[in-house]
Structures are given as C-alpha cells and as structure tokens.
Length: 512
Ligand code: XMP
Image (cartoon, rainbow, N blue to C red):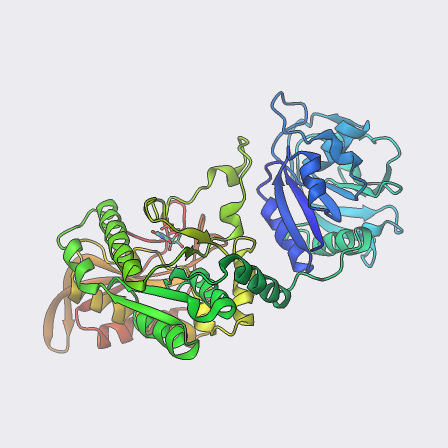
C-alpha cells in the first residue's frame, strides 16, 4: 500500500502528523529518527516527513537521521526541527535562537507556484514553535514563504522536491495546515486515496484468515471500543473460530452486560462465553478500602477468572487483543518530549506470561478515531463505537471506600440517570467522560417529613483529548438541577448531589 514515512525526532505532535496524513486517506508510518535508510527504502514510501522535536541540531546529543535518507530519491518535508535537519545536512545554516518562538503567526506565501500552497490564500494563519532559526538557505533551496519573524518560514528545493516549513501544519492552530499536508502527499508525492476503513476491512480480513488458518482464537471482550471492534473484525474474518470471553466482574455500569450480550451474542452471533464472576469479585473486595489494593485484587481476580474461562473455551492457538498504534510506536526518549514520558500507568501487568498463546492484534496499525470508523464500517452501534473510556477496574474506582453490593447498586442507578440526562441534552457524546462517583460521606438531609442520613453523590464531567489532562465541563445549571432532582427522588440512599469542578491536573479524572 502507498505510504508516507514520518521520522520522529521527538515532537509531541508526531502522532498528530500521522493522523492528519491518514485523514487524507494515505497510510502513514512513524519510525524512529535514526531508522536506517535501507529499512525505510524497503517500505517503498512515496514521501518522507521529518517531524519537529525539542532539540537543537547543535546539541551534542541531537537526534540525527541516517544521511542516506537524502539518497532515497523521494520527496521530503521537514517540519520545524525537520527544517534544521535539512539545513544541517544540505548545507544551510542554523543559528541558536535566543528564545523559543511560540504561538500564532501569519505566513505570507512568497511563491504561489509552490506545490505546498496550491489552492490556499496568500496569507495563512500558522502556529510556530521553534527555538533555533534558519539563517542561510541550504544549497539550491528558495524561499516560498515568510512570517513576521522569519524570512525562511517555508523553503523549497523544487528539483529534488524537498520542502521545509518552520511552523506546525498539523495542529488545529494552523487552520489550513491540513491542506498543506494534503498538497504534499497528493500533489507532491502523488499518493492516491487508498487508505479507507472500507479497504482496511478487506485487507485486514484477508490478513487474519492467512494468519489464523484453521486454528481457533480467544478474545477477552470488555465491551470497550477496542476489544469490541477487534471482535467484530475477527468474527468477520473467521466466524466461529473466534470465541469471545466476557467477564462480568460486578463492577460494570447499568445494562452494560446486557448490551454486550445483545450486540455480540444475538446480533452478530459471535460465540460468546459469558462469565458471571460478580459474586467472586465482591467477595474478594470485601472490606478493601485502599485504592491501590482494590486495583490489585481486581487485577488478580480477573486473571484467575479469565484463565479458567480460556480452559473451558477449549484449545485455541491465538489470543486476540485490541492493541492500538499509539501503544506500538516506540517513543523517542528525548528530554522535553512529553510523549516519551507519558506512559500509561494503567493496565500494566495484563495477563500472565505463562498463558501460551500467539497474539493476534488486528488494530495495531490504527489510531483510536480510525478504530471508531472501523467499528461503524463493521456495523457496530453508536453505543459501543462512541463509548466513553471506562476503567478496567470499573465502578470500583468510582465507589470510594469499602465496596458493597448495595453501594454499587446506588452508584449504578445514579450513574444511569447522569448518562441518560446528558444524552437527552445531546452532551454525552460531546464530553470525554461523564459519570457519577459515590462518596463514602453521609450527611443529614430531609426528604418528605423524614430526616435522612444518606450518601453523597458527585457528578464528574470532563473534556479531554487523551485523558492526560482534562477540564471540567460547564454543564448547564438547569440540566444539573434536573439530574440532581431525579437522583435524590429516584435513588434511595442519596440525599445530596455535588459537582466536581476540578481540572486535571491537579485532580485526576477518576476519584479512586
Ligand atoms: P485518571 O483518573 O488517572 O484517568 O485521570 C485517566 C484516564 O484513564 C482512565 N483510567 C483507566 N483506564 N484502566 C483503564 O483502562 C484503569 O485502571 C484506569 N484508571 C483510570 C480514566 O477513566 C481516564 O479516562
């Protein structure tokens, strides 16, 4: 398949570049900055993008590419630090900037013939973030764009089809940046529009059949987007050779187990092994209040239940997992690259090594939004495809203090009201997460003529791009009022509802 290779020099935006290229229906792969040119050539890319990065080409530990990448004979687009690499390797000059230049700027296109700017106005809003500055053009390059602060904001070597831009076209603050990237991949590199989820279904189905042959596959279905889409895709490829194991740990939200059984069992007719472990989990969690301990108990119980379930499912060679592309990309360990430091602290551990399966990971090439599109393509309902992230330990992280069956019931009912009302107001799918948290705090209330001494429920609604940072959502007052009234009227055990108005940081999304 036609593809563009992106060399990652440690920019926090590298994955965003890859996504923008894929939004142009062109497949893109991220490789480490020092990947040997021969390895890149083997992929037969139609073009190369050099990402930005936090370093200076002058730093002693500056990430540098294999110089043979300039012998590949394919178009190159250097972005930000990528321009400095072009300069460094092709005879230009970079000078240390006094301070990093951040923020909005206006690009004036100096050469309207330049392939990058076809169909775009002469002035463009762009987003800058760079430290060092280009002060002399590399050999045979010409200026094709300038900004207030740079005479070399966009440069081109038309014969070799090399381009350099000092701003970031991939971020939303460069509103027409995507068109610049589209011009590069379609106009300069000549890529078509092969990368669509419809094509991917065909290609992935064949690949799964080839890999699995006549063997059997087991998949742990959580009901989350990734495992659900993986299940639907693998089922399409190999039908009954796939068995999905769904563990009900008793920490699911209202109707969750039913929806999974309805969608996968009844609609898709997938072989679904339903494991009701609700009692076991409750028993193991009895009296446990420490959040870390809760997670450990749940993790261990899950492995035990899942292992026993796989034995009952019969012999299988493969274990399918919904691993996504961001989990696969090796981040560049450069100081200042937040991507390198952000490693999910969640879901470490996983399944024990002694489970002897070959992994089947049909979503390894995809970003989350692509997985959602794939789900739609496969006919999964919105309820699953647009599902909000839900932690593995489930309601245990939203039921503070000791967990009991009756507390979980209170939480489930309240949470269902929050979700229902947010959906009715058309806000649910617009937020990253919206849920209820049951606090281990009782206070005095009055309901009817009676004095009550009941629990407090917190509403948490956040906006986020990736869960690493988050803002609390300003849910309209009248909606909050409706939610609060319904909960105190309909859920016995709650006499007070509060709203969490903390962002992350300093708070976390879950309360634990
Ligand atoms: P925090 O609470 O750390 O959560 O701000 C960040 C994001 O991660 C989700 N989360 C989890 N996801 N297993 C998961 O798969 C977990 O154990 C877990 N804990 C938190 C959380 O819902 C939020 O989206």
